[in-house]
Length: 292
Image (cartoon, rainbow, N blue to C red; front, side, top):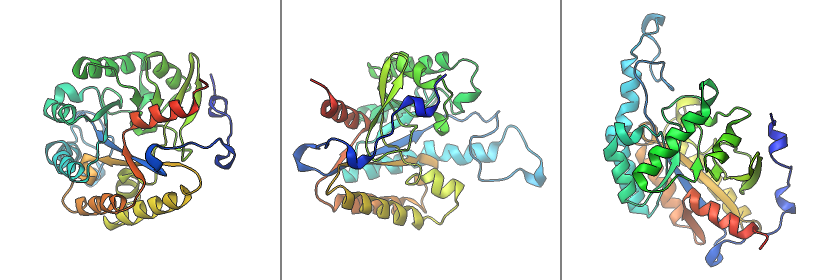
């Protein structure tokens, strides 16, 4: 079973052949919109309220409902923001969303969003009894709904086992967003050949800043703008790809949305920046690095 260092070779970004974006652009930003199906009868993937009196409870209604707000309300707030700034996000979705929240899936499809696999229900890949079945069900659910299979995959919590990449590639997945190790796409070795890792953020990610580090809402805007500003500066010499990861129940709430809007307002003010999906990043990278 390959370890990470056997999946890819080390490559210093300053030593690589130049990658050129279309239209004279210097960097591209892709947005990942995470929409998830949580099971109230199981321990919740994230929590905002600790167990009362230290006694765990199931079903965990308060924390389930905290997340459910995102699918009932927060999603639509973020949808409007994307429309205002001309952003087409990549929808990282559990396969079960299509049946559990068809209105969300229909809206994303009608707006031309990219559908990316994000597990079938929200839970870690390394706890699954049958990863291949889980991946296959997710791919098939998206294929049946959209008419084509997803090309990208983000594992819940970025969790993988030694086999996950091989199983994803064998299911037809072409790129993953589980490896936050570069400012450019990189190739990963799999049993069937190779696949691509598209830069995914753990720092410009609302889960990291809000749910884990518990910063105030304004920190999301400041850190993400600072991150973008440095990549924009760096991209004068070397093309960069930046990701922004949002969750409906974190960024879609009333006290945070204005800070998320500030990020996109700032990005939109800069010339030579493309607002892409993960699929667009993939196609560009494959074209730039093809031997033909």
